[in-house]
Image 1: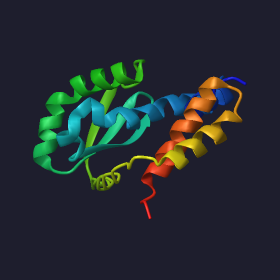
Image 2: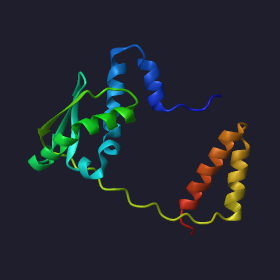
Image 3: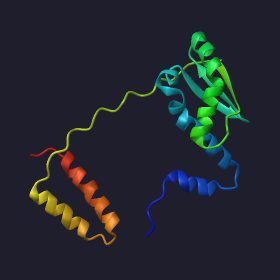
Image 4: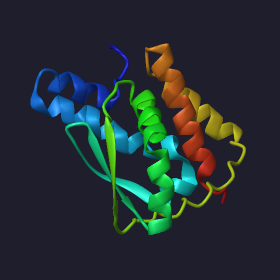
Length: 152
């Protein structure tokens, strides 16, 4: 059995040659926005639409709009580099409401040491899997799951 493929790759294959393929490529702009502009700018400006090479960005205030007006070319170059193709030709700025990102998730609880019985259980369950790579991944997943359960 071949390795599982990322959903993005499956979508790209399924949409190859169709009009939606272009929209999928353009969607990468939203994925890379934060990386292209950094956290400070991303908290004051967000992309809202993209059409024919023009990225429309909502900006929270006039001072930020003025600042971003000077950075438009740099932002377009960074976005194009991150998405791997020259999608963004121009950036159009407009005032608008900026959605704040959700708060970060709380940190995971610390992992505890597995008991010898739990380690034996993981080894027994994983032994039934023939593929060595899949067996190791299953053992890691099961071990992590058990390590997150508090000891009674």
